[in-house]
Image (cartoon, rainbow, N blue to C red; front, side):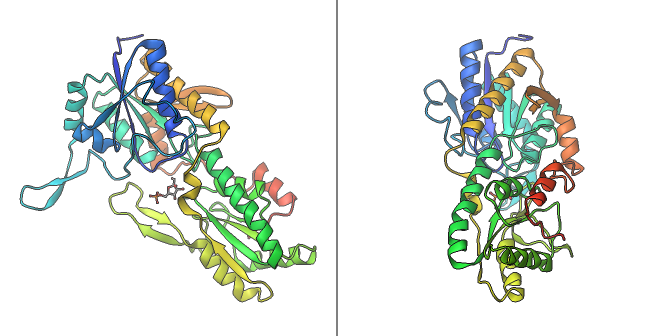
Length: 372
Ligand code: F6P
């Protein structure tokens, strides 16, 4: 150990993601069992750090959470302590940099290392705390699987497995009524969840952000399926997919969130537009929304989360602060927070390659992307 680390603190920021609890458990157990480190967790992300609201993380408090979605530490996607809404003293609110309060709290609590589980927004603050001299380790979190520096993030396999089950269930009812059913899946601007769930669930059409589509092309694919004796189609629709003319559907703007746009409603629009051009089919839509984010996590994600958590503790042991845990191929590794955030800021997320092997395989077995 480079310097004696006696106490670490964890926090989870941004939207929750399947696997967070499993990572919290792995870090806690590995830190206690291997290095005798005391572990605490701040509640509600950075807000808990600001208000000094924390709980002890012990072998006992982290038991029974390996398989559970969500986060026992709770989360918030709004509290950037470098630009935080506080009372202005005159009954109003004003934005202020309160990060020094957080640094003081860490000192007061005797915390040697802050382990931050989060996506782009949360890790941007992690980088900024690192720049202020705090020992920080980041553990990337996104079920969208769009982080460029790592091959796969925990939560992705769980989310796409639930998405697959949705499509499976829609297949039998679509077939019984010769209907077309559009199923919307989360994933923001990356098509990973929809492509994987669409392939695994045998969707006839997959609409993903990386491949703009037209209603005419989808109708053509449905007609082709009809002629081949498949007079029903499940259309897997990524929430962030776009029409060839650039049209996207935004469901909500969440002020104060690092990425305020929330997609929602594309499957309903595609269903409406499709019904006008394929009068021989009834077209319906469903939007499971956050359901793919909740519930128990897959065995694969439990193991991946354990690996991310143990690797984080090893980085602490080696004193490699200012880094984010990664997995490349089958090897755990790390990349600097500066690099990860720099890439995210210039939009270098990991996207589906429209000409890649996976899309080609899907097309080879007759799945349409609405692009031809
Ligand atoms: O990034 C995870 C994610 O679930 C996206 O797939 C989705 O677009 C977004 O978060 C939804 O955010 P919120 O929970 O704030 O509605």
